[in-house]
Length: 313
Ligand code: AFP
Image (cartoon, rainbow, N blue to C red; front, side, top):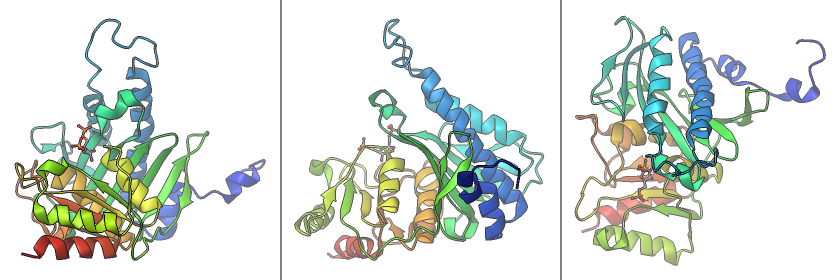
């Protein structure tokens, strides 16, 4: 240990040490670390591009910079030189792109900046990453080996799982990710719920489920940002996030590959569940990059209840 290190530093476990101790294989450790570091650049981009910060909002009447495109560029350009990534797919790309030589170990899916429409309201937003060991057009359970998300809020936090539990790190003033919550485990049931879509567009089964939660006294927590809303269920150790099938869009809004699979991997590793109302999210085969899917994700009691209501005739 370097001399003069503060007690605080001695107590902190940084991301690389945590993954090494957890037995995460070296290339995957380095890849997760590289992506976590890119979170710092994306956060800087959010601050730099937010005209409000520069007091220039709408003075020129220009469109808010496409932050999600910038975030995508940062991820793609850095991963291109990582040495570990063969293919990259993102919500900002039309197709899967080969960014490696063709013999690298991992395939990456990214929602580079989910909730970007919330930037001007200063609400938290996030980056969602899936790390696959084979082509992503498969069942998540067979291809995903790790998943992570970065939350850009009052603090920058990063949650990851490499199949050995779910853990949260916070970016400290020195620019290091230090462990804040290890082996996060959801309770059997929580007391908060997030609900997407308009009530008038819900199916009768979904409406009956939400009315059940409300009768049970669940508290509504919904920001319009998938990452902070899921993060709240995880850090509060329970509850449920739903974005259901709607009368006009039976597949709901959220994307299976870029948003739901990584979050399902992380929540399952924390002892929770994720379903489309009938089957596990991680058991659904990805046929198409932009495939959408209804989602019920969180602690077991609430998800099991959702399945009961959704499959009752
Ligand atoms: P944006 O990226 O367009 O802000 O959408 C965010 C999102 O994809 C997801 O983060 C939210 O959970 C969901 O949409 C909110 O959708 P509604 O605006 O329909 O509630």
